[in-house]
Amino acid sequence: MMAAVIYLHWTATGYDWIRPGHYHSIIGGDGRVHRLHAYSVDLPAHTYGRNRNSVALSCACMGGIPDPWTLPPTPAQLTSLCTEAAAIARSWGWQEGDISLQSVMTHAEAASNRDGRVMHDNYGPMIWGGSGERWDLLQLEKNGPSDGGEQLRQRIRALLRGDPSPTPAAPTSDAPLVFKGETVIQARGADLAVQIDALGRSWALAADLLNRYEIPYVWDASLRRILIGALDVAPTYRDDAVQASVGWPLVELTLQTGNAPVILTGILRPGPSGDRAWCRVVEFAEEFGISVSYEPLVLAERRGG
Image 1 (cartoon, rainbow, N blue to C red):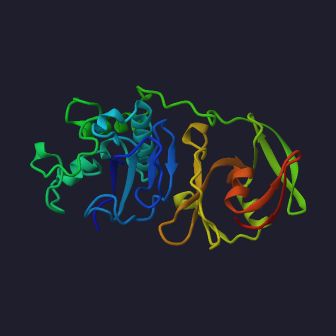
Image 2: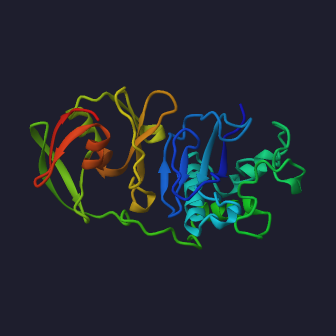
Image 3: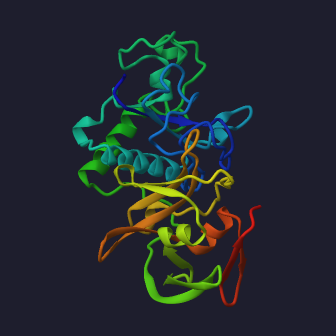
């Protein structure tokens, strides 16, 4: 098996094109990362001949017609792309010196076999002898230099060194996450302890919610995710998913089956018995089909839909 590789793409669409099945994560024009599939699973068709033991990150951009550069990668997208790649690399135990053409490649570079592994015919940029079918991130701006891959790798290395990003990520309502107090709500007719963040949103332990609604799950500590055994969940891939900007380690709830689609993203917070996974109560209810009423917040039965 080939060593693990992170592949960097663009979607050749508008800035709001977010679809599961193609890439593990897609970054919208505002820089928000939409995690669609667990990074531990292989997807079938992101980088021709190179889909095994790899992760695909893509910026939703370059869909302008007739000139794709009317929708170029935004600074916020490129910042989030590098930040997400660095986070994956760090989770794999990689350090600055591990970021190379062999470990992090643009689709332009992969299409042209620039890493020396001849996996297929050259369908990359024509300046590299290819057919020109794929040239993702060859350049990062119109008429820019043709070293987009190396520019991105330099930024990823800097992040792994701990250098601040030269381009701050776009601000979101998730940054930073501060908790202000705690209370109790009713969930399925019984008390449920929740904590309230600075924006007034309720958070609960993921295990408490899953147990309350008798949803089978397994905690995978090595990959920092909760595997959900339910077969009646259809992820909505919401636009307001929790982002790394909240300042807490992230944890994903994913389905156990197929290509492990991400249901929702939560956070890890320290507790007396170790780190515990927390998630937003209303988001959990919406994703798992639980009836909700407000003022006060009450979770009823799980009805689906």
